[in-house]
Length: 325
Image (cartoon, rainbow, N blue to C red; front, side):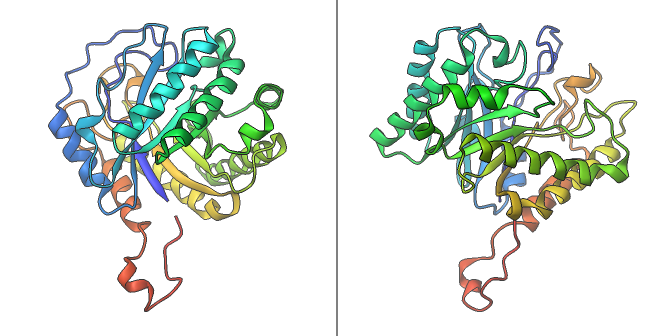
């Protein structure tokens, strides 16, 4: 399984994006070292970055380049903020070129088209933008012959959510058949608290339902699911040791059914708190705002190390002895 993390600093509320906070400045070198330590010997490690086409949102981080190298590649999220599907399609093609120039990786076309504003589902023309963006990105990737995965994502769909019907009615089936992954932003126990005993089963239920919905809409079963965002915030009411325990529980539940529902990437949101003493939604980091590690940092590092592929030299000796991830 491939892993990933978002490295940047949150300067606003993650639900409303309207509460500016006095976030300590990021130390790029310390961030890079933390990413290197986490990535270890993983086959591929995604550094998740956000770009908004229109809407005035600054790119986060300003440049992904300092964080890349070795096994670390970019996961570029292109948000739709312009209410201009044709312009967004051109931006999607440009995003493919940017990722190719950065050494490859993947792009995500739109951000949570089934979530209301400030996410992309609250903007006019979002489903048309998704269709045009995917079409343009795939065409540009093919033109370049670049190693760039192209996909899209969603938040957890509630009953009655028309997201999948909108995907079916807007995205041509031949485009859906060619996407490289479908992403899920999934934050167990954050917005709807759950008893600890129910958490693994709830996680697996959501993942199976997401796979079924994706198959029903026309995504082939071989198109993998990427968990594009997951995490849990700390704070006075949420102890740091509990973050480590919960992230470990959720990851264990995911890995248990990864082969069944075809999950091949797991990305954590995010690396560092925006403000460790600030609002709850700015405390998702596994580092505090001074770059010191919380217990969950080691939890995530050990998870990545435990699921790395067996070195090729050993495979001929013990074929099949590879930790599934």
